[in-house]
Image (cartoon, rainbow, N blue to C red; front, side, top):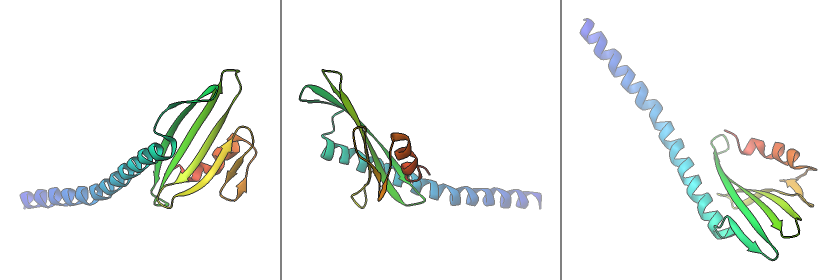
Length: 136
């Protein structure tokens, strides 16, 4: 009787573990697909280079990707900093949703600040507006 109870407990634990491993595997695969989409997008739209000579300066660019399981969307956050030889420059942030090929927001330190249809006034405000898309 004790042996059977142990076997049933072990079987239940195995089933419980398998049941929970599957969603983790699916989430991992969605995150991996998002990372691949982001790398391809960075290559296509931004040339895939992190340092790009432009005129009298250099554009330093990078990106992050984030799969949001609540929204079931893959987001791509581009960050660029233009540094010129005369010490002037600007920063830009752009948020895209890769499955719909839609730009969600833009921030440039010189002029533009918006997320979807909402205008903003600062990088901090832009980051607050984009935060729901970039968290789990």
